[in-house]
Amino acid sequence: PAIEYGLDAPFEVEYHDSLSSTNARARELAEAGETDRAVVANEQTGGRGRLDREWVSPPGGIWCSVLTRPALPPAHVPILTLAAAVAAVETAREAGVDAGIKWPNDVLVPTGTRASRTESDDVPTNDGEQKLVGILTEMEGEADRVSWVVVGIGVNVRAEGLPAGGTGLLAHTDDLDRRAFVQRLLKRFDGLRGEPETVLSAWREHTLTLGRRVRVETPGGEVVGEAVDVEFPGSLVVETDEGTRRVHAGDCEHLRS
Ligand code: BTN
Image 1 (cartoon, rainbow, N blue to C red):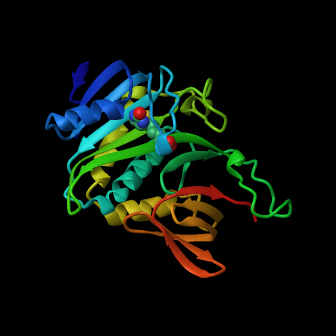
Image 2: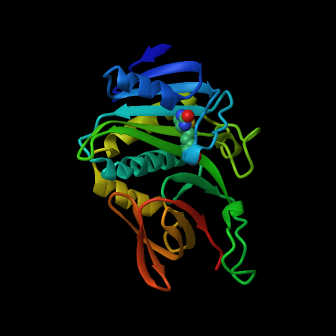
């Protein structure tokens, strides 16, 4: 691969034309004892998403993984995933793409076609928001401290060939320098990774979820209510008919009404 240290880049960046998965390559680097490395590929042939899903990664996308060794217990690692979402949304906005974050870390572009609340209650409205960026975090270590964390960030560039509900940067801007985008993304992530309070306040500023009615599929069952806040290390606070719930992990849908 081509190795670069960008001007004041915080990570040594490895660029590959094609890889199975940048997360898998970053994991290899972790197992070889490396840290503060980034892996970028033009194409992934075995891109992985959350919940064991495939992540379609055609050539020309921005497929990127960052390896770090933070002094955190595994339970606090979600704050790094939120940091990556904030870094991605801010970099997309800087490139002229008006995106926002759906809890916990999907970056979506609102399409302005949200149905009105009179139409029906509790129907997912994800058809009015298209996914621009997905993030997959993997880690290894002990209960009190991780050994390494890999944060994988997939930014769609072309909209063609993506699964339904996906969009790419080039559907919203004509002017994109992918190298510069990666450098800015890494720099922002570096600036945020040790600043949990900054991450949470920036996340609140950029979210599409707070103030919305949501349904979250959690390992412990479904939680439905109004999303009112996010708390360290990334939990969603939901006001339900039964009272306040804090959700630590799960799949979130924005609902009408
Ligand atoms: C999701 O399901 O939303 C997460 C998608 C994460 C995709 C990125 S692309 C770079 C890195 N390498 C992978 O195989 N997956 C992540």
